Length: 193
Image (cartoon, rainbow, N blue to C red; front, top):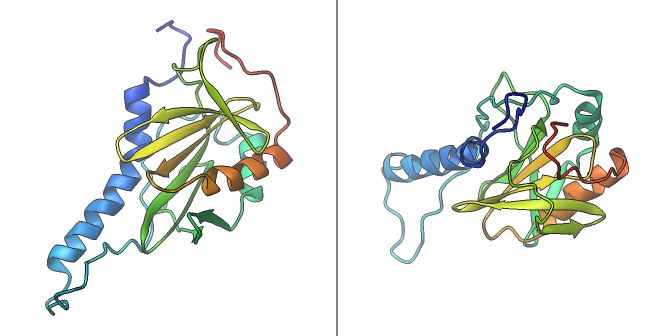
């Protein structure tokens, strides 16, 4: 890694972005194990409860406080659709990191957006990009969730989506990105943005 390169190594970025998903799953599991003294009917399957504020650990995001990220966060939808279910905005534990937004419901792990992160190391001239609603995304697959990085705007936007969420969250966020941030050429070089 070059001395001026401020991007995060992929494993660290995925771990930091996916941490809220693991925290919610852990809290839900504890709630199932210790939260109820009553017995459930034999034919019911317990579901983890996913309510309350979501803890987002701070990670390096030099442009999170930029006007571009502020404008995007203000324009994000109040709800996202995930496999036909509506995911409303979730509260973030204070102090919430700048440039972040979370959506979810009691049945699904949260969808987490972070704006202003550094250029991903995986973005290369031969990277396979997906275009969704006019925005070019780089997928960073992880265990139980994928992080998608919008790579054709003045700031990098990362959307972490739990497995099985479908394309609805990406479509909803893409529409806000397209309407808010002008498209730019994808930077696949080694110079930091």
